[in-house]
Amino acid sequence: MLKLRLLTWDVKDTLLRLRQPVGQSYAAEARAHGLQVQPEALGRSFREVYGAQSRRFPNYGHGQGLSSRQWWLDVVKQSFRLSGVQDEAALTKLAEKLYCDYCSPDNWEVLPGAAETLSRCCQLGFGMGVVSNFDSRLEAILSQCNLRHHFQFVLTSEAAGFAKPDGRIFEQALRLGGARPEQAAHIGDDYSRDYRAARAAGMHSFLLRAAGHGEGPEVPPEHVLPTLSHLLVRIEKE
Picture 1 (cartoon, rainbow, N blue to C red):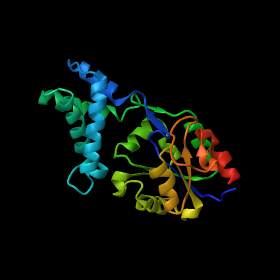
Picture 2: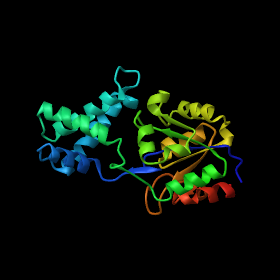
Picture 3: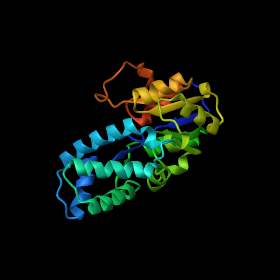
Picture 4: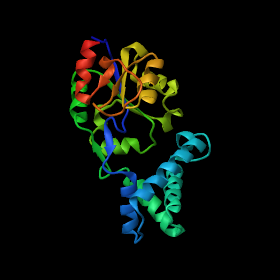
């Protein structure tokens, strides 16, 4: 059994997921403002704009004069512009509303088994922390979804100044959790940013990969979690 003191957790698609695709949420908000935009077109535009913005201003523009809020407002506006909406007043209202809406549990749902697994880990005495490529809204989102109380700390890439897979975000997490790398394990759904990056920082790690999904690089079966409820069994067997 692993002698662990600290468990760190990714959030998006590990503990929480969006209730519906971004394009559908954006299109619904547009309809509320009297605008008709196809969800599929908005989804494609969002993916293109998000990718371009992430390359131009990594980690929500940290150190480049942008706040994460402005970063996201720009992404939303440009996604709508690319989908044919040119009314700047409407774009500003849509962007502000959607930025706030994505703090709400109306847009997020807890993955099956997440709350139960977190509760059990706390009962067993593990230190608990979040390490997530996310902006400053994450604390509020976790609170609204009734998960925040499980964690001693929530470390976002915006606050850390580094985004996974940069090992420095894991080093900060280890300091916050008061653990050495070999005493800690990270749980996430992304091979490069979670599983491999944590191991490169000297930690243990487990990859959430549902059966039949997320084909990717080979990972030892004992490090793969078909569901979060498999975590404690994996820890005991290591």
